Image (tube, rainbow, N blue to C red; front, side, top):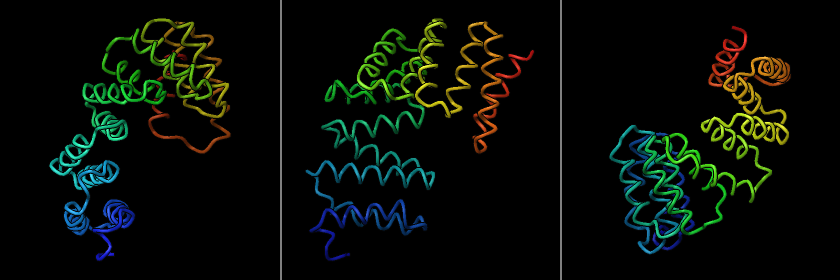
Length: 238
C-alpha cells in the first residue's frame, strides 16, 4: 500500500479505516495515523473529515483527550459544508457539550434547511439543555412533516410535549410511534412514563401490562431499559 498512499484517496481511506477498525495495538494505530496525516490533501474536505474522525476515535479508544481534540480541530477546519459540521455536532452531543452541539446542528441547517435528522437532533439538544421548548416543538413538527414514518421523531415530539406539560398531545404522539413500531419496547415504556406523568395511573397500569406481554416475546433488553421499567412499575403499583 505504501507506494500508493500519496496517489490514491481510496488507499488513504483504507489506511485511515484500518487505524480505528482493524489495528488493535494503540501505538501501531497511532504511528499509522501520524504517517498518513501529511499525505492527506488540504483541499479534500472528504478526506480531511475522515482524518478528523480517525483522530477523534483513536483519542476515545486511548482515553487521550489530546488526540480527540486534534480530531475535532481537523473537522472544524474542514467544516465548509454540512458533513463535517454534522460530525462535530454528533461528537459534541456524545461528549455532553450541548452548547457546542447546538451550534453545529444549526450550522448543518444553514446549509440544509430541510435536514430532518438535524431538526430532530437539535430539538433533543434544546430539550436536554432546557432551551427553548417552543423552538424544539417547531423543529420536530417540521421534521415530522418531512418524515412522518420515523417512529423516533414521534418519540422526540412526545418528550418535548411532556416537558411542556402537554400530556394529552404527548400521549397521542408516543402512540403514533407505537403504531409505526409496535414491537419496540422503548416506545411502550415511554407511553407508561407519559401516562404516569399525566397522573393517569389506571391507563399507565394497562400500558405496563401490555409492555410486559410484549417483553415475554422479545430477547432481553438493555439494563437502561430494565431500569426504566422498574422505575415506572414502582410508580404505577405504589
